[in-house]
Length: 120
View 1 (cartoon, one colour):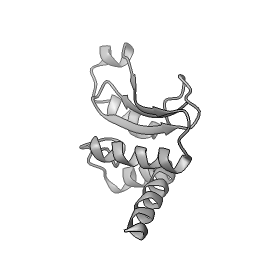
View 2: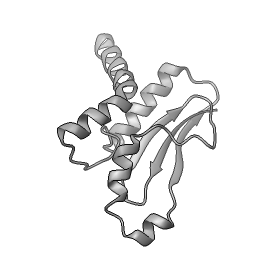
View 3: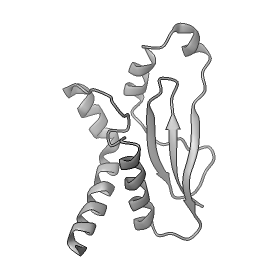
View 4: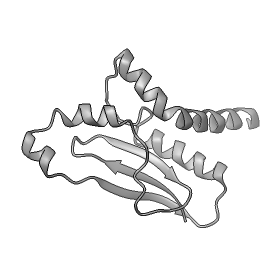
């Protein structure tokens, strides 16, 4: 079962991703450095006992990888999470880190965007 999911962290920030297999254990591949940095803003008691929520936003048994990528882009836009973390102000070091882990997301976004532009 292919899925689009939303991960919500204790900081309130979200990550939208896709899963081509439908694994209940898969939580995406966001930047560990960015998440650790965000967690530093939480009180110590929250950092010691927290939950991370995974919500399945959409799923399909028979969609193509292209359709799955299009749905991912749709939800990224809907939740305004193009950087993976809405409202996150990134400095140049963080942008470089973010780029390293989200290059594949960017490529999927561009492929969907360009494909849509060519058809129109």
